[in-house]
Image 1 (cartoon, helix red, strand yellow):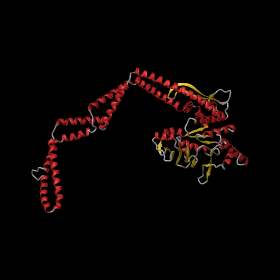
Image 2: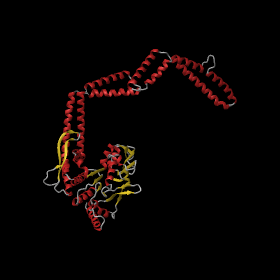
Image 3: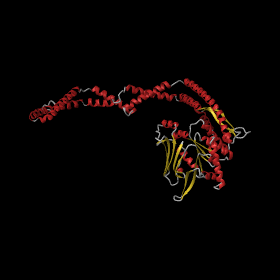
Image 4: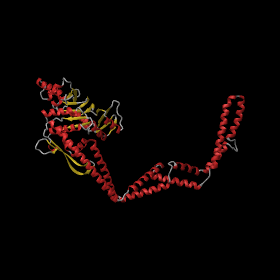
Length: 567
């Protein structure tokens, strides 16, 4: 349920905040007062197309924010999109838009997380259903009628459609593979040869450790400087332990140890210094031992040096081709192995592919047939229920049929669905979009939503002047149908009908006003109290505010209150 809507700098609205409640809420006001602007803002925040013209004149930035109660279905959607729910248990849709020079930008967020248009489209149907008389073109589209029929069929029918989609994708995949087999065999073989060459080159290199190149370069430096290392090692050893022409470090430390030992005998406080000298002697002797061992193991080996140099050159060449690092070379080798496996196992003869093509095509046809049978059964139910919903709306002799015509198998099945409609006896049913008048289309859309209310989760139903072109008994029937829908869904209705407005649980008046301070036109919205409603209904009925009109409006409200009780 939509419980609040905030709009800033959108069209004629500078700042508007609306709190909404369950049940049937009507929006009334003079023609051009801005009622549809509010619905346009709601459409925009849920992914509708926006341009720089939506910004209020003189403004550079705008905002629309719609807050919905969080249902289980919406929680599942948030989890799927990896978006956290807000602490208050609500879902907040935000649209921010700005104009800088000629550059218009807009950004959408859900609970503060930026989302794209595709995500909003997947969310929109869970939140609202907007119905307007201008949907005649949409109603006439066979694809839309087929979608409505499938939605009405619920999970069972949609599962059959998913099965068709799966079979269609498999069939298309085999079809593409067969075409590639017929047209691209030479290219495939060339690619396979290239992969084999690369695999053989990398496999022969026997690269196991990504650190091998670094280790080899270290080994090369040592082998290439054996004489220098031996010479410097002897100098270091003599300086530490075996001096010839001078005292070695160990000898000097030993002399210091003796002198300090005699001093400690006189002053025990020097014990710490003696300990340091003794530790230094031990470390010098250990360092000298390790240097001696190191220099003794050094040995010039030209063959080993050449072998290391060649290996370094080989690995560097492979890094330039497949790297830049040895780790990337290993990854490339592994990818080639996968590609070779795919090419080797995935390659089938043309005859095998043609057999699989025929098999998947037959599976698709069978899945389409099952979907067709499910649609026919669903169509019969929709026919019965829709006629039942239309008869109270002044169409006692209405005829409605769901017509199926075969089309080539597709991801949607093999049915073209057409809604056939006849409002008058003696007239054969014709395509709905071709013969329905504005008033008939209004009633059809309302009846269609009433049918869907039984099979869809609660959401916000929005009707934009759905009652245009009707009056009297039919308007009353529409009002009662809207109230009935509001028992299962939140219903928002823009209306000019006093009969419809009287049935509302909540009444909002939209009006335009002139701001003398800003010399601009603004839109304001007011929640009408019970005391305010008779005056507004009298205006809708065309009677102004004279007493007979007010009496008529009061009577309408009393009649509506009585009608709501049994409903």
